[in-house]
Length: 165
Image (cartoon, rainbow, N blue to C red):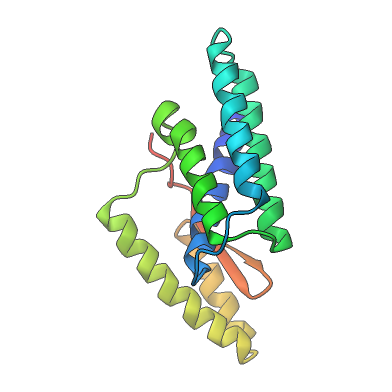
């Protein structure tokens, strides 16, 4: 059970990172290697599911695609168009078929906007080297179930209640 929960958390964290990375791009750019890789993985996953509904192999391929997308984001070798295409493919399986992606409600959108404001203020404090107040914001958010993860000048956030029961 713990392993399944860890995998759900990994998917949730990845999905959040993917959406935030897509939002950071101004222009779509050109399709690159990631789109080709994602399309090949899609065909592989469909083949595995047609093969006596080989769910473990299909999920392994999905995690390989997630790993490739994360690497591409880390290396900066990805376009918005690549990410959108990959997200569409993943949503087909993780959202529509397996129904394990978090669904956003109107209150989630408001929460996202509020967190954007809080993170902008916190980043401004960090830029001004006001680490005491910046750390207090992080600690106070953690007390109410919102975890921050700083990656350079970017900050990702997640809650423990992002998944539906």
